[in-house]
Length: 242
Image (cartoon, rainbow, N blue to C red; front, top):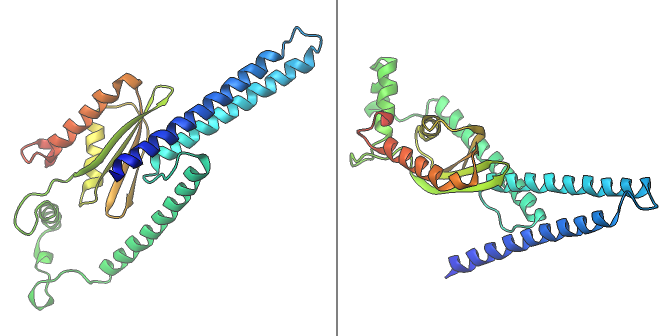
């Protein structure tokens, strides 16, 4: 029930946001039409009209940037501009905190507090370097019971249209060993026209955001391609899973 209420609230806020933008655009067009370069005011009215067009373009660019910002921030509370910016700031602060935790973990590992065998001896150190690396990758994909763990566990996959033949792919998955590498392999295998891409980590999860050059009618096809590629990678018999 709470999910339905939240979805309705997001839907209502989104509609209100778009209605506000459409109203602004309509007002601009009405005012712009009022100024006619053929009127007696001449150059003055033309200059005013140009200023209105310039302001409209400025607001359009600002809205596009806000949409792009909203696409890369995982937790947006509301659709208004102030909330989007505040949520982005909170998210950046969360990333800084996670960066500090990761750096602390790295320092702990480098200080020698690694898992050792009986008596504090690390038996893996007797293996050649390439075998140690292979053993770590193999162990990471199996749990304590010997069951294989999929390298990519998708929690959410969303594809939104941004206009100007641009689709935004937002893929949230569990953070596991080699997941970042495997995600990159998935998108490289699809041969997409990628404009830009980034990946962020938060609360044991990874968020992969990719801006792809494609038409809006390609959304469902693109989503199916990504899901198929991930399924192939998670298949132990697939060459991509090696």
